[in-house]
Length: 274
Image (cartoon, rainbow, N blue to C red):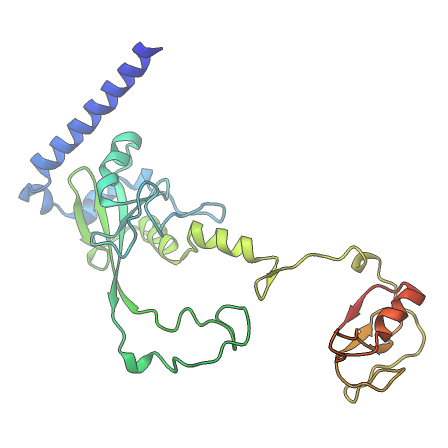
């Protein structure tokens, strides 16, 4: 067991030594840098994939470190596996997988002026994000200049995508990687699917079996008041029989007269809307 583990460690050490040596010896080779990148890319076309709907693209952060598109050298997206790598890890990924073509994404912040941040004294009235009355987290975010290029390893031959004559498959792969939601963003959206203003939404067991009586009750568009005491605030509409009744009375004497609760106790009609 120890013998196998030691052999594996020696194997990976040799691979890393080889690729670091290759990078030092050939990374600054003028002949390699001056190759026609567009023509060279064609020789790798079979290893490049076009992202499909079920592919997750890790373009927000390196899967091994905290490097991201705003890091000095950006992030490298493997155009076969769609994993994101920081500059210090992309050679390691190339050694392990044999992938050679990466899309380098860089986002260079453009600081915004203080005059464009808006009113800093906006009153927060909701526990919510990026809606009226909530926390505006996007307001002070800077704009970015995007610099995207194709990089071919192991020699780090790099060319801006605007300067390349790309085959249709490669151009489409790049376009989809750039436009697709990142894996991190998809996870955020999925986790928020069942929330509203930060609160978890769940289907009431009563909603699936809701009965609505055909009792000719018509709810007016305005002028609502409790059917029993004429209170006009804090009202509840019963979804079964259409009755409009006041809410509970609070400990300080404010609120309603508990008529909506009393109606539930008498009828067991459970669903109401405030």
